[in-house]
Length: 197
Ligand SMILES: Cc1cc2nc3c(=O)[nH]c(=O)nc-3n(C[C@H](O)[C@H](O)[C@H](O)COP(=O)(O)O)c2cc1C
Image 1 (cartoon, protein in one colour):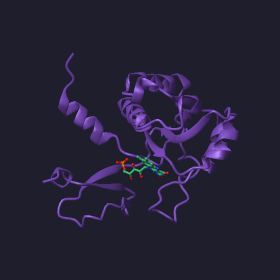
Image 2 (cartoon, protein in one colour):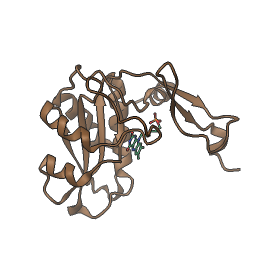
Image 3 (cartoon, helix red, strand yellow):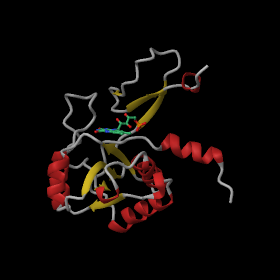
């Protein structure tokens, strides 16, 4: 089987974090299931595959999940997307602690798989770590063995995101920012900075 490298690269470049969505464009449970199915094929430490997913699409549950999330730490004056621009769905990644207290890097690998899959379907999202996990567990009615690790906000994008090449910029100048035209800019380091001499 052959997969074109340039297409993979383009997909990865297009897979940017988005925080404003067309909330009225719904995302079905079957679409979310299709995305989670991709995680079956990711690498897994010890092949234990300890991650589980809770899917949120209903208006009532979305309304309970949203206030538990913290958006864009570099925009302290912004409380996150307004009504009408909030995520149409959430995929909540949970660790089944029955298999141990950590999951090595399985969580990141699986989030990346889902995120790339989303982009192929025209969806965008944002991986969120800053959230009230204890309350989320109650809201979702999770058994104590399941610990929420990440929330992935999902929806059809309502904002443009551009990669900025960090070449020639200050090494520590990596904060994303929003320009006056409402475009979100995300600085990325050049290859030359990633390779150790
Ligand atoms: C592990 C991890 C945790 C993150 N947590 C949050 C978060 O709590 N809130 C948020 O708005 N964005 C969060 N993000 C999104 C990052 O801010 C985003 O990935 C970064 O700005 C780079 O943009 P990009 O995803 O388009 O490359 C998180 C991303 C990752 C990978």
